[in-house]
Amino acid sequence: MNIFSVLHCETRKIIRANVFWLMFLVLGFGPVMMGIGIVLSGDAGGIQWEQYLTELLDTLAPLGLIGYTFIAAWVFGREFSDRTIKDLLAKPVSRPKIVLSKYLVILAWCLLLSIYMFAIGFAVGAILGVEGGSASLLWNFFFRFLITSLLYIFVTTPGTLLANVTRGYLAPLGLILIIVILSSVLASFGFAPYFPWTIPSVFQSTGSLKLSSIIILAYTGIAGIAGTFAWWRFAEQR
Image (tube, rainbow, N blue to C red; front, side, top):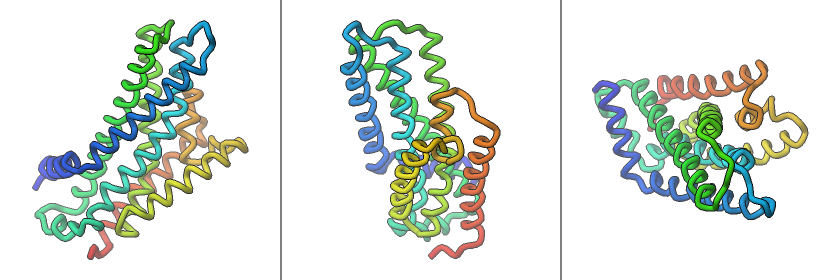
């Protein structure tokens, strides 16, 4: 089997799963409630698109981190919890191709969710009468949010490694909780540019990153990817 055949199989498995549609439901609810809250808390004279999108996307980005980390862990961990790992390994395909196809599916799924959340947030703002926008303004916010989402997706890779090592996706759920707590604490002390899972939010707010933040982000993501490929290469899946 070539990589495209494996990718096709992985995509079909994901789309047929209830979790795929549930994630759209859950992550679609966030921008609706946040958008309504931002508009209702605005000044009596109305709220502008720049203010609306700034507040909305600064809040949505961390929400995406939770969703992306769960997705990444679930795509790998479900093979163990559903006991389909033996069937997967029995296919005439190399293990690196299996891992690569799963990462590509995770990337596509999470990017689709990012675009979906932005679209929902934009629709809520338009319906509620947010004013003062322009095509260039909307594009700039969308482009920054998309890059932020890619950075968040990149740092989900330690979650995929943990899902494989623990042979399930429950342990990564604990990792998500730890990340959320540490992100809040470290950000309040000014360490957001140095914690891998808060660095993307720094980019969302400022539009740029320091070299130290880029290095930390790169090491975290690459370590997760390399560890996952190595685990599939050398570990005995039972």
